[in-house]
Length: 376
Image (cartoon, rainbow, N blue to C red; front, side):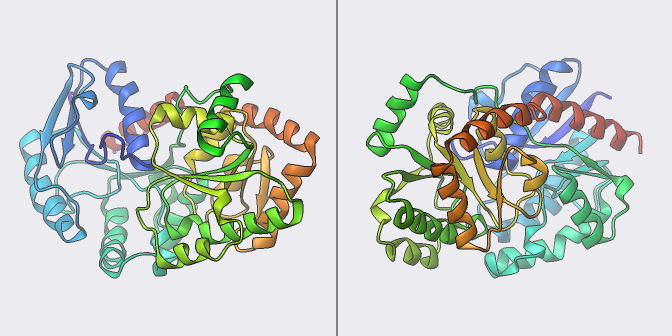
């Protein structure tokens, strides 16, 4: 093996979510582990120089930037296909699951989840139609598939009738900077973001599937029941912020205790996560849930959903709730507030559970999957 091509179009400085993190963290390890291999990083815009972090990286730019779903077909099926023919790599790793359907290049499609199959109401029609039309084809035509949890593997197998032997589970990890921090540092973070008060934390793109409306309503119930001064700190960009989410927020009596911090830097996120009273992360669907491992790595207790992949990630290290029940989420927050031994016990379990996941393990599993794909 001499050449590997990766889709790196989601490596965008200060704008990376789950797929971007997966791509960056695994590549930082693989590129340095295999200096004899040429890694072709395929971007859709001029990359930030920090993403060209090794001499064996060859950046390739295919324009135009894929900022609109209508450009996807051209970019993937024509421009990318042409570029892969030029490079002639041993394998193309489709980090977002998408690739040229008529390419001769062996392809490992990393399909993180297929939530759009289960919650079509949460996507614009143009995006939904593209996903529903193309992802069954991507799943069937990929040489192999990697996904981020046993839940997602089973879901892809069942929904698209794929042989389970074609799919490898490559769990996500957590950056090594997510660690517990001293109380003195936590105090500074609270003073900066919540006027010194303890806070529940949500981290993620502000998308309807993240279940923010029920989280807001649950926080309101928590405030009414406990009279606690605790805040809810929401970290993430308003990528899919809807009028319904806005209306739910504005209807609350305690909306001033909900702080929308927007997107923060990585350095800030480490400290914010480690200083939280608990992570409240209760999506209605998740292929993995990187914020869960990040919080657990910090010893921050988590409240999460009892469906899809989240029980697999959290196991016994957090409180699992019905994400469709405002009361269930609120009761978990109340328990976390009232039962002081519970929070301490969960904090200890969280650190142990988080050790099951790391980006080094992710990179090792992805490399195994790459080898299987090439040898297929």
